[in-house]
Length: 271
Ligand SMILES: NC(=O)c1ccc[n+]([C@@H]2O[C@H](COP(=O)([O-])OP(=O)(O)OC[C@H]3O[C@@H](n4cnc5c(N)ncnc54)[C@H](O)[C@@H]3O)[C@@H](O)[C@H]2O)c1
Image 1 (cartoon, protein in one colour):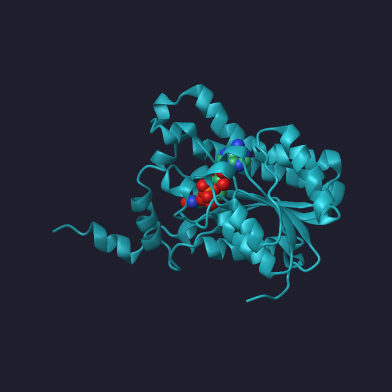
Image 2: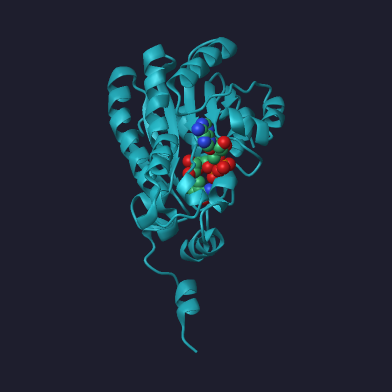
């Protein structure tokens, strides 16, 4: 269903690896809503993923960029504005990776070099993306920047280890840069705190299936899907949300406000 909510808008969408990726759904919806945008991902992911299929379907191009590299990010904005014919109106940061989670390291046994990688890829890169845009003046006034977060930034989920710290950093950067960009250019910056979602990054977390089911049972509306998340991103990119900034917005079917549910009580019953 299209309302042409993004007609005339230009954007950059990072993080689409395959059709499960949240960013994949965002790209499909942004295209339906009339936006023109470029896609980007880490050079290594371009070799593994199917992003070129998505680019063809969205009538666009892929510009490789490692989100930890300021040089790559500046090139991304320069090429995107050239290709799209002007400054961008929206940017999606849909990037996360923790080598410690990949290797199954417990929180007390983190490899600190990897920890720094997790923070750099999953948190700092959000800052770098905005700093590069600011330097090149690549985002239009009233533009919208969105990052994807998880509730482990506020509450402990033992298997989320250093990604929890990276998400706390990401959400803090949304406030810090949201203030700066709001004052300078009326650009808004928000994070969406999304339900567990079966994607490559999601399924890499230890115990993912169990906490997906738990969240499903705890949320009165059930877990929000990647497609639902894409709709929320479209709203945040659109002019309908122009006074929302510096927020971490829970998009989780009610999970974050639920203490316990009847379904979970039922599961806990003895005998
Ligand atoms: N899946 C979930 O349960 C869930 C829940 C809440 C938030 N999120 C967040 O959503 C975002 C998107 O993840 P997803 O679930 O769609 O998984 P995904 O694995 O499909 O996407 C993660 C993307 O990050 C990219 N990436 C990794 N390192 C990069 C780098 N150095 N430079 C540029 N890109 C890089 C990957 O190539 C991949 O495309 C992440 O920030 C993730 O933490 C996911």
